[in-house]
Length: 110
Image (cartoon, rainbow, N blue to C red; front, side, top):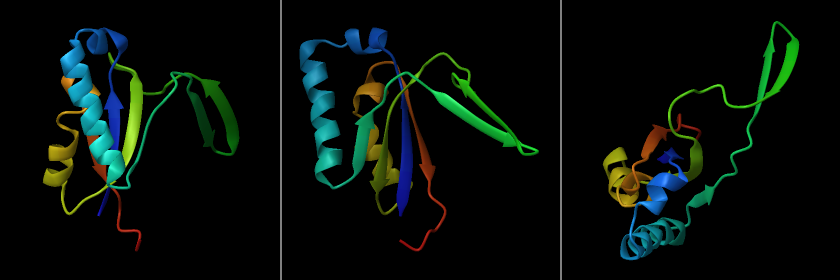
């Protein structure tokens, strides 16, 4: 099963970790990548596309409003959500005062 993991966090949280903690959480990112999963940090620039009633609108900026910006994502293949939790619990955003949202894919046959 595949899961989309959205990582929210900012530099303040990252800078709050000491050097040892930073190495530890980056090592966990490497574990996830070495399993063959897609993972990346993202730039803060957001383009939103809306085409309601065939009225195309392209705007800059997020449509989701909360305290933390989207910092990265991963697509993780795992047996269940508990396995994903184990994998992401010690990644940078989870440990640096951020949050990881885990969203299972609908069954896509792949």
